[in-house]
Length: 432
Ligand code: NAD
Image 1 (cartoon, rainbow, N blue to C red):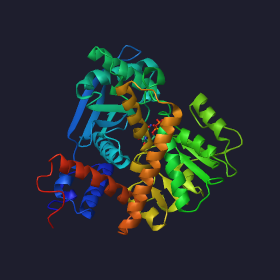
Image 2 (image 1 turned 120 degrees about the horizontal axis):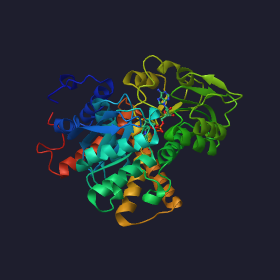
Image 3 (image 1 turned 180 degrees about the vertical axis):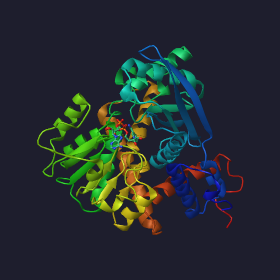
Image 4 (image 1 turned 90 degrees about the vertical axis):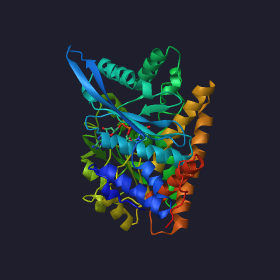
């Protein structure tokens, strides 16, 4: 390696940590530095203005981002989040994880990610629709079913995808629903896509529990986040016989050591938008939730939740990262010292992009698969991915961890594709 990651000026902690992990993996694999050089920055980063006339007649100009990280394996793929705190560096890090995730699980996509800096919780449905259509109008020229395919992420959903598909189709003058995935079924969606990320989490959680001989029936599970990923994960883990003892949203959580009536908790969240006011449960903070005594913890909300400050309080035996980047490097180190089995984000939440790929295939070929077919294929991919990463982790014996193993496994495949495509003129391996 001729350069240090420290030489690259990166202020954002998440992006810096991601670059460090990529660089470390390239070094451990003894790959050419050129692999890191390609991966350290997106191939294209676009920022657009999205002007919207709000319901009160005022004009709000929102900022939209799209990071197209790397397309050596196929078209860029990754969600769009609506969040007031989104930054270019966050979007770049998220797009890097998409490159690794797609490689890891073996779907022929590259990595992309997008965001609009806004707070949809403060917006009417009509304003949200205008933002979604405005983003596509501004960004449409760099997207496309064979170029870059967005999907839902934090505070975006199937309805947002349907507006985006409609706007893109009108721009193109011909149906092009394959431009986004995660759509509702009547407009080309795939059965099972909505809960695919959570279902994927459950499949890898089952494999992780099996490796530690923890029976899933009766296992105590805690989930941070009660949205798409967290909410469905709670219901699906309960279907597996687990006891969901705690769950939270951005305002706090609920806890019952005897196990929550999770269906009614999720119904309450859906109907009131909050976890407050549920009877016969203890209200807790997000910090208390992460420290609950349990077998499996599924952080399924936002980045940087398990940190140097609270990782030592985590009592779970297994952490399954439903969210992207919920654990900081310092948090990771503490969990590793405490022998917590970590199922890292790029593996744990790759069920979403896997079923997005199934949706894209069906859109391109005009197929409609049934739920059993989708679920069977998802299950096979997730179990295979878990065992490949776990096998790599055990075989490498590098004093490493599951996250490093996952990075190494996926970067190896990305690098091989670069080599075949002629991007690595100096060879795949480092000359040292
Ligand atoms: P969502 O908007 O449906 O739900 C997010 C949930 O997190 C909400 O319940 C919200 O109240 C809660 N939340 C927000 N901030 C919080 C905080 N500071 N503390 C605790 N809870 C908080 O979003 P989602 O689609 O479920 O995404 C959640 C995570 O999963 C994100 O990291 C996202 O990138 C990742 N992810 C989502 C998908 C997908 O298919 N939706 C796929 C892969 C990864």
